[in-house]
Image (cartoon, rainbow, N blue to C red; front, side, top):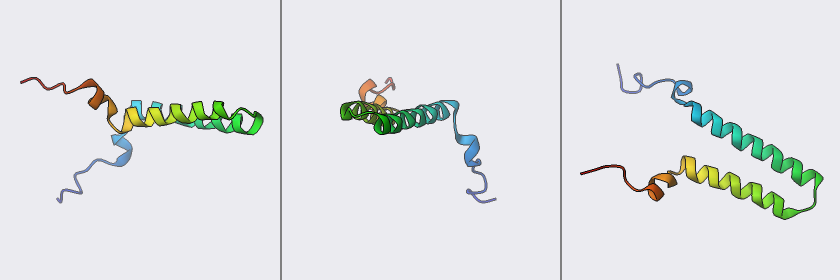
Length: 74
């Protein structure tokens, strides 16, 4: 059996936290779209965009490891 045959299917590698983050990002995107369609203040759209970017940076670009420091003890 090759190494690629031993890999788990992609749908089993998702964690519950990843699905929750995906749901939060989708709901923020829907809210941002609704605000853009029905209101004038552009600063409100900017707040939603910054919130989405912050979630992506924190959860998927491992910023919390950089900010939190190394957990390894010598």
